[in-house]
Image 1 (tube, one colour):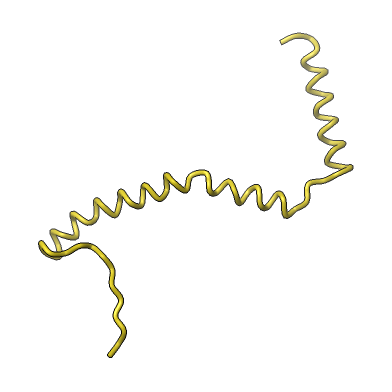
Image 2 (cartoon, one colour):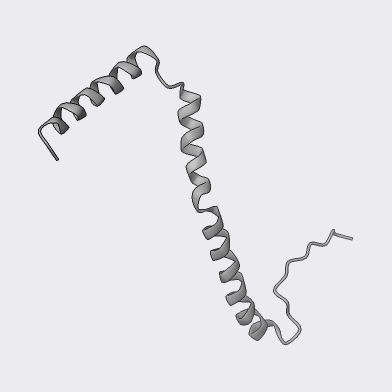
Length: 78
């Protein structure tokens, strides 16, 4: 760090403020940017769900018997 770093940071802060006043970011852009951050961890979340399902499948087999597969089915009423 040197003596000019403080001045540089002040200049950047003023420049950011001027940009927000003159040309503000549209609200829909901010919303879309925040929403896109939710997708950063989607792979890890899906992997966790898959792991949990596999762990539960072993327990379900013990409860339901040797032929249980842990899958869901839907039937229409007759």
